[in-house]
Length: 386
Image 1: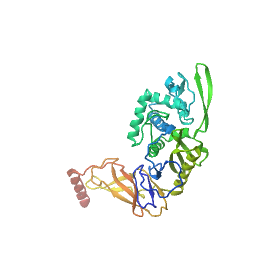
Image 2: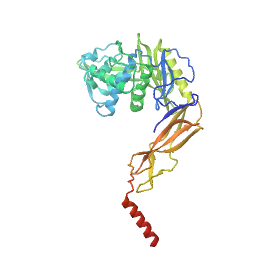
Image 3: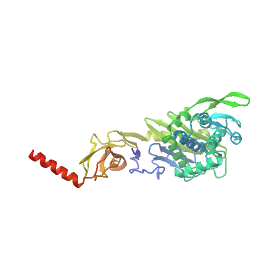
Image 4: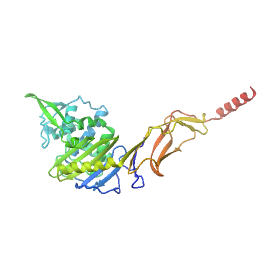
């Protein structure tokens, strides 16, 4: 499946992730840097000064979260694993849950502290557990950013405390948020927690500590389900706000707002615009019941095929009545292996290319050989004179 977002107002498809040369409308945005992205495709629906590197504050933790969930989902790390808090992690200032050196907490509880309460001590403890040390983890952060194409980001720590050269752009935050949401959707099990608690296990005994979500946008916007807020006096107020409505998920990145209220207002403005503009379109009958393709020079003259998945598209700015599709054959000569991409169904909106779905061979077909030809001729001869 290759999902897409297509804007009728622009009159052409821009399928590249993270770029948008022209906004459809001008929005009343006060924050210096913003970007609105549709999750499935990565299509940018709106942007303003999205490539300027800015201080991200605790929005940094999105990368720490991503690396943690990659380890968890690949089963290299378990939620039940126990993290022993180091003196370095316990010394982190700013937002914290007051972990003590030597204290033991599960990976899941450290996740909650980092995501819900935006705890710097928890983020650093997670970084040390995954990387072995925070410096090694920071190298992992910068390497992963490069792999994702985050060209205007550089990390100096795992939690977002102010540091020279520690920067992210709004576009990079959106790319990172998309990677996290798209490939590790269980993150919203944590980003949507409003209130919770952990138990401190120290030499002085056990004590309960309450967690309250720093992302108050969850209660301010219908459908909000994440993702991360950030604030320092130098960075201002920033956030990656995610929300879902009618099967469409949007990511609104706001950076450098002067106040918390401006941050939330601009995020809501972006999301409102996106949801009003987006019309979901799904085709779950890609092949229209015709699941065979003719094959040349094969032991069989046709092959059974299946679509890789349904076609999903979010059309912005218009209806879906002009959407058409055509089958494009890519491979019709034997031999063909099971699983080969033999065709594509391409989709158009009023003639504009808006995406495609791969068509996969459901069986193998060998190449026709001289012996096969003789066998066919013999069988035909026998049938004639039988």
